[in-house]
Length: 396
Image (cartoon, rainbow, N blue to C red; front, top):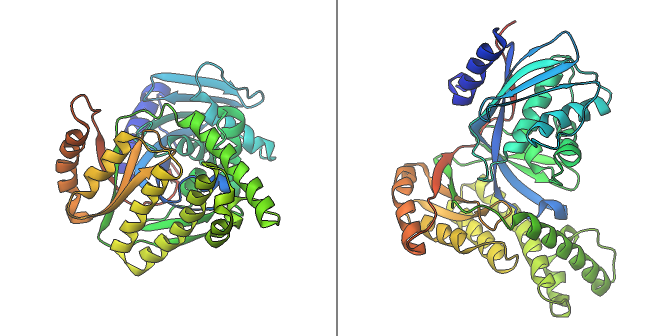
């Protein structure tokens, strides 16, 4: 039950302490894990994320003026601004997420009311579960609730993405906001990042997904991410020339076409293209395996994704490879791969529900044995596919 959630309790208790009254609503916004489809989103390809049962909560009450007051319970920090003058905060970047959302909504013609709010989150920072999209979506639904505005959720996802681009300064894709708003319990979301068309994919019973954070910060991820984007654009130029047709993105190229001209494209550009094209194919094969309950086939696709990210896209590292090795050595683990941008961060594993405790017990020991003394301490937890963001009324 959502009300038993720890972030719910912290947000409500802090709201009572700070504002000496009861909140009217609590908005729940989930974290997310991408099952497969890595580095395909900015190539207008396909992704298959789930919303997970770890939440950020916004406890809130409307005001009679245009002032927004936000308390971050977990940061021991606060923010106050006017809806009539929304500016970036250059000192505390966390403030730019809710400010950006308010700005983006008003840019689209909806006049908002001021609010008092407390935000609390159980979504771990840096583990690749997208706490940033959760805070955007949580505040977007909170602001809209108090002015009775109904915005289609795919449209709202684009507004939240705009907020992150303009205010937080992160050129993110659309996947995180879409799954945070459109997630469904026991389902993944097959999303076309070109036109935002999407469909729900039912997940087989008896499985869970384990997130294994290596403990290695993703220090290279931002700079290398930009390099990979540039290399993909170069690959499009090479393929357009060699195939003698107009190609908008790597999404438009088949593996057979790439094979025809593979040796004419310089390395590593050709391997970057091969990863994206094969990864798009793996997304489609994986979602079909989920529909059919073909767990071993799905697990093999996760491992193939990791190998491609390691060898062709070169975004893995020693610790991520060790974590995949440790995870897949445990009985009941169907497959695993790095998840997120790479260069540290977390791995994802698909496991039989009955094997979760064994994974918790064995993987940290095996991971450290592979890496030797001085290896980082991993954090491992299970997640299940959850509902997207929702507003719960506390006072009618």
